[in-house]
Image (cartoon, rainbow, N blue to C red; front, top):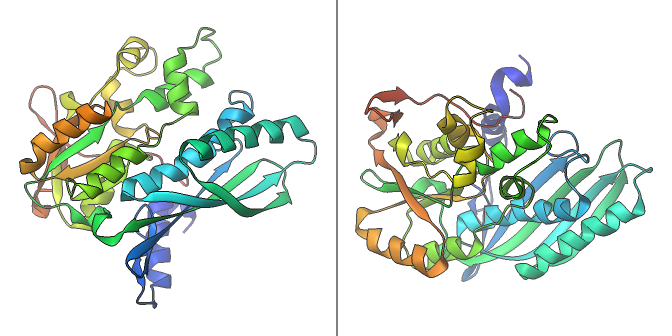
Amino acid sequence: MILRDIGEFGLIAKIRNWMGKSHPDVVQGIGDDVAVVEMGKKALLITTDILIEDIHFERSWIDPYRLGKKALAVNLSDIAAMGGIPKYFLISLGLPKTLPFSFVSLFYRGLKERARRFQVDLIGGDTSLSQKIIINICLIGEGKKGNLLFRNGARVGDDLYVSGTLGDAALGLKILQDKSTPKKPKGLIDKHLSPNPRIELGQALGRKKIASAMIDVSDGLLIDTRHILEESNVGARIWEDRIPLSSPFRKWVSPYSKDPYRIALSGGEDYELLFTASPKRKASILSLARSLNIPITRVGEILPEKEGFHLIGKEGEKIPSYRLGFDHFK
C-alpha cells in the first residue's frame, strides 16, 4: 500500500490511532482545526500549516508580499474556526541559496502587515537550506473554554451555514494557471492570493453561543462538511442552489467548468467559516451578518447519521455526496 491508496485524511486517521493522547490537560488533539490544551481558566490554542513551492504556490504568479500575508492567514483561519484569539507565531523557512534577498524582505513585509492587522507577534523560528521554498508557521492563541467551537458539536435539526461566497479562490487559481487568459479578474485572483481569515466572525459565533460546531473551508465545502459530520456522528443535506456564488465567479466560471457548483463545492481555499446552529439562532445569525457586514447563507441542515450525506439538486433530486475536495496524496 502507498500513500495514494489511503489519501491525506486516511493517513491522518492512522496517525491519530497510532499516537493517541495521555495528558489529561489535552482537551482536543488530532481531529480538529486547532489543538486545545487546558491552561487554568483559559485554553491554549495551537495550530500549524505548511506551504511548499510548486505544491501550494508558484513564484511565477504570487509575489513575495502576498505570499507572506497568505502564509499567516491560513493559520489565522484555523484559530477563527475555533472562535479563538491569535497571539503569537513561530516560522520555519526552507530557502534556496540563489533566492534574492529582496524576495525574503518583501515576504516578511507581507507577514508583518498581516501580523499587525490581527495583533500577533513573531516570537521565533528556524531557517534551513532547501531546493524549493518551504514555509511552516506554528500559531499560538487562546480562548475561554466555554466559548470555543469544535467540529463535534453538530446536532440533528441544526441548520448549516457558510460565510461569504464559495469557489472564488479555486476559480482564481484556475485563471492564474491559464496562460491563455491575459486579462485576469483581480477580485478572483485576490481571493486566492490574499484570503481574509474570519477572526471577528469566529469569535462572535463562539462568544454569543450561536454556533454548535464549526470548521473553516480549506479543503472544499463537501469535504469540510464531512469532517463535521464524522466528528459529530450525524448526516446532512446541502441544497446545491443555495450555495453562495459571487458575481465575478458567475461571470468567469463557464470556460473552466460546465457545472459552476462543482468548483464551489469542491474547490477549497475559500477560508470561509462553515458552522451549524439551532434554528432558534436564525435571528441572531442575521443580526451578526449585518453588524459585521459579512454575508452568511443557510446552505443545508443536519440529519440523523443513518440518512447519510447528500446534495439536493436544482430540480429537487437527491445526489449522493461524492468525496470531492483537495487531498495531497490523491
